[in-house]
Length: 88
Image (tube, rainbow, N blue to C red):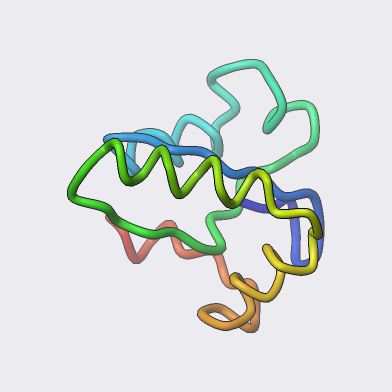
């Protein structure tokens, strides 16, 4: 998720993407996303296995450069469109 194109980025994992994005968009839960205005879904991956999803999340969070995460987003979503409506 992002605050805006090329803005603050947030990486997370959830079993219910639609619900979780809604919570971020409405700032239902206080925390990082609310503090930094992060509410735009700009990229996501689906995994059948939660262990694989968690492993991937940790890998992305541990990437040494922000540019790697930006390239991942731009490869699939060059305009940084909000993808929330696509997952409903």
